[in-house]
Length: 389
Image 1 (cartoon, rainbow, N blue to C red):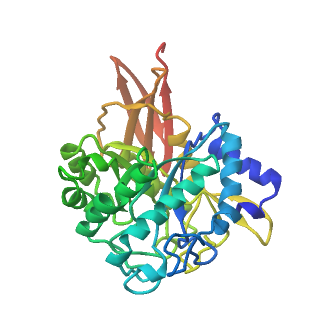
Image 2 (image 1 turned 90 degrees about the horizontal axis):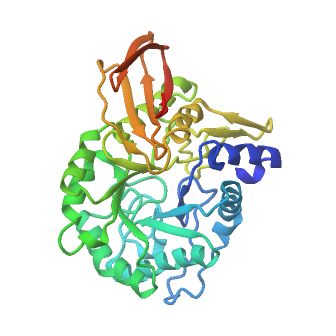
């Protein structure tokens, strides 16, 4: 959709997301080969007989993704840290012979698939981009109408340990962080326990998770309790219009903010906004799985639309800065959501969400001082307390 925006619209969107004085996004997540939000299904090398990947083509990525990435880095004034994720291996490598409807990676192609993933990393790095992490597989337990591939915990573990990590070392890519799971929170602890042992512990830098099955914040606590050195990152949390009313903007934005606050309070260290720009329907999506995005573009009327979830995300990204440390906090009711963080400049930021239809009176107490304020119904507010206050 970025290619359809005017230069003024592109600048507005990029400034909001990537300029340091605004949201200051500093990391991005990009799919390897097609995902459901691609204009079509594609593979960089769909040829079964190409054992050395000599026909590997980066053309589909270069067409739309690279121009947006370059423009985003220019606006940010720095290299963005990239996470790569695969939705599916090429069809010929899978048990169901197709990119969608699940299927699994055939054992005889594990070596080639590991090489394929390394090739994707190298294509980005050779163009000067900074790839810092990847996930083994997007949603490895989901059989989807779009690009998908199923891994049991044992299959993911074996592929990681015996194929992917050795291949990355052979290609001098062992500085890339590897994340497992990349799926819903309620199974994240089970996956961690099944994959992380003495043979794989040093290979796993963290676990990526999605929000589609509900809160499950305690699952993050469990992972952190047993594996405190592993990073927990929200890699995907879009609102599907097949589940949520497109016109219920305030309610949908509040859902995202509730999840964000819960994750922040339960050891999440970073998040990716998936997606940052879609068309007026919530696509393009080659399976019509239309979803919300903070920016949507009405092509018929040439109008860039700011959705309410953009404002809600701004409360987190604008004020909680990289390197911030979570502060302990308590609240008097479950009808409010609260998170508090101390930035590197010693300012304390608190984000408060009211999802109720009535206003709430709040008394903020910190360091022996107290002041009263009111949070309106169905709203989110952010406060910043400076060190010299």
